[in-house]
Each structure stands twice: as C-alpha cells, then as structure tokens.
Length: 301
Figure 1 (cartoon, rainbow, N blue to C red):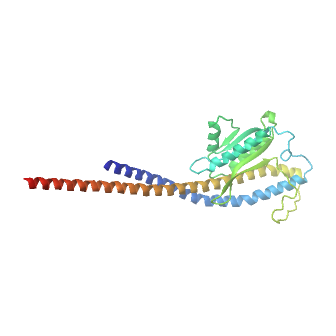
Figure 2: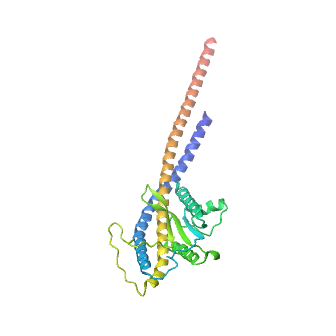
Figure 3: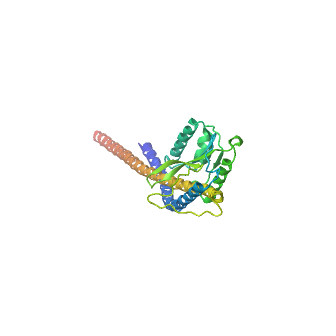
C-alpha cells in the first residue's frame, strides 16, 4: 500500500507540473490573440479596397495583362499552404492540411501538376514524411507574421507565375489558409489568387456603391503597379487570419488540457486518499492485533 501511495503522489506532482505549462501557454495565447484580431481587422478593409481597385482597373484595361489573363492550357498550379510552426493547437494544422489535400486532388483530376509552396514547419514535415517535392517553404513566423514575410512570398509567386511552365513556372496560384470567424470558429478556406478573377460590378457589396476611378497615366500602368501590391496584401491578410486562428486554436487546446489535468489530479488525489486510508486501517489492525496478542500472552502467564 505504501508503494502505491508513493506512486499516486508522483503522478499528482507530474500532472501538476504539466498543468502549469498548459496554463501558461493558454494565458500567452489569450494575451496575443487580442493583437492578432486587431491586425486582421486593420488589414481586411485595405485588402478589400485594393481588390476592388484592381478589379476596376482590369475591367477598364484593353490589353491582356498576364496577371489577369486566363491561360489557354493550365499545366502547373501552385498551392500556397499556410500551416503552423508549432503544435499544441488542436486540429488547426491537420484541418488546413486536409483541405490542401482535397484541393490538390481536385486540381490533379483536372490534369494539373501541383507545385507546393509551404508556410509553417507542420506543412513541411507533412510533405517530407511522404517524400513529396516542395517548390518553396517559409517558417518561423506563423503566429506573428509581418508584411515583409508576405512580400517575400508574394514576390516569389509572382516571379514563378511570370515564367512558362516548361521553365518551371506556374499557370495559376491557389491559397489554402484558415479564416478567423471568431474565438470558437475557424474555417479552412481556399482562394484563387492568380489569375485575378474579374467580375463586372463586383465592387458593390451589401448595397455599397461602386466607386468611380480615374486612371493616370492609363489602366495598364495602374495594373502594373497595383497587382504586386494586391498579391502581397492578400497573402498578408491570409497570414494574419491564419495567425489569429492558430492562437485561438491553441488557447482552446491548452484550456482543455488544463481542465483535463484538474480532473486527473482530483481522481489521483481521491485514489491516494483511499490508499492512505487503507494504510492507516492496516496499521490500526496490526496494532490491535498486537495488543490482543500481548494481552492473551499476559493472561496465560
């Protein structure tokens, strides 16, 4: 019994140490997600406005700009997959990886070759474990991305998009990321980044009037200047959405782990008390038995 009691106490100390770690990680994620949400709110209106401006310039341009022109034959499609650098975030990375697999399967069914562009160590590990080729990868900033990271990714994608498929270039670009809805809900989503899908009248949303633009020196020159900014801003917004989603998922996962640790400590404490009570009962029984034996020997003497 004594050995069992010591084992319970060791388990309780171990769970308590784990609980301190999960509680600390929960508090860190909770403190950082406020800033992450603010970054998402700040970047989203700019990304939407820039998209409307690019769409307006494209609809007024008379030339076939390479970033908005559908290629007659799409041979290679880029999939930019936004995962996390670290684990302990529940099903966050697995959800976006599963969505990426679904998209890749759909593109292959259309006869397209996939070029993976990966953000986050989880996606890179997923591909390396399966011995898949990786076109490019970035890591180290998934929970706190900066515009410089989006610009680096965007420049590489635009550069590859400008080359022919026979030279290792890509014909279209898709982004798989996790959209932050609220603290409880985060949804894996897919957008096609390039070629830009221009829809006439798409600027008006929810009764919003489409602004009138005047282009100087020309819509074509404006497109040349705006499209790289559009690509970078969309990628940056996706990175910020993914970062907020990752922190929210981590906070929930760590809170669940902390609650489970509390429950486990309660159960182990109850078992330890039962074992201690059994030890005490056994000691009392031995004392009473010894006293009875002494009394019996004394009476015989």
